[in-house]
Image 1 (cartoon, rainbow over the protein chains, first blue to last red):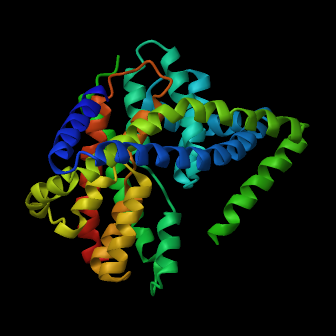
Image 2 (tube, each protein chain N blue to C red):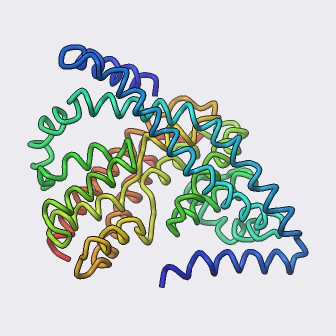
Length: 183
Length: 168
């Protein structure tokens, strides 16, 4: 991230110095504003989902789901701790169902739980790639946008999207299995 | 149909909780309490990502990159009009949704380009957002490998999306 940040920052700022030096600060501030707007939006979403997750946790429901999906998790990530297994199951289920507010909190908890184990780099990379290639079954925001713009059949794109998302996840999983060594 | 999904899920969780004698109010508030510290840790990372994308966009570098990469994408069957989406998507979810709606308005919602754009949007994620947010508190800093793998996988699925929209 440091490398990406430095390169893009330097290149953009040097460029802007030539075309319009005034925009440097103003566009940085616009960026900050957008970050604040997003934070305010997500804080409420997280609060609701974390509340629901807490009920799932205390009732033992999340442990139960984690148990069902354990073989699947083991196939992808190898042996992971019970805690990591539980968070990852919730994160992946939330991903599948397109509950975009539910994925991030569980994603962060998963990474922290994974890091407690030694030699978990492989599992962490796999987890990153699975989240980044999003296995989403219902692309809700796109459906809403298509409907609002008067598409004849907004749901036309569901099947192609599922197929394309499968392609990205399979390619991602294969690349991790080939290039990252399991310790 | 899908609008019933979330309410039913919440009802199921609540009822299961009651059966297992969980105090729903206590549990819910305890969980929700975590949201604010959560966002406070995320905030600096979000600012960095957004500042960067804004600079990149305003400097005209993103347009240059689009023009530069367009012939390369074309070899793989990705139309020039979709290049911008492919480049914005890894950085910003809301930004790429704006690009998608722009494509809808310019070419018509049911055109080939618009369907492609929908599929590309739905089948990839904001890779750099995940790198920044999921790893905000983490010690792991070697993220170059997963970032590259994810970008390559997303590119494959975008190429596939342009192809499948011709057929389906």
